[in-house]
Image (cartoon, rainbow, N blue to C red):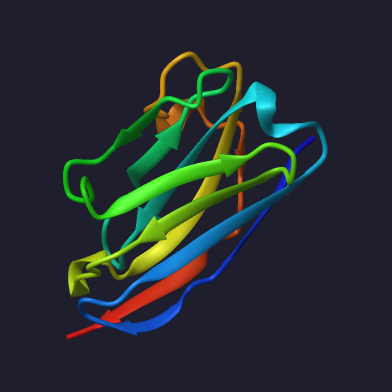
Length: 125
């Protein structure tokens, strides 16, 4: 059983930066493909970024490429999402996700085994 706890959300002006953290308790994260998803009000949850287990290869949604960076520190059992040049359209609840031995960097929502409870990011214009 993996428990995921996100932190680092908050209110930021457009053009600003935030770094989200996802701390995991339970089995080592090295065996898990990790991802970040987000859900804006009235919209479906969408994939944002992923980091494959074993290789740490990454994947990003087109809307965040070049602005967001996912990274992981397996020794700390923590995954990060560095976000720069934030836009009002990035406003959403951001969720950390994990799937053991998932072979792609881009996590499919249906393949997620564990979800965090989310952290709210609000970008003001």
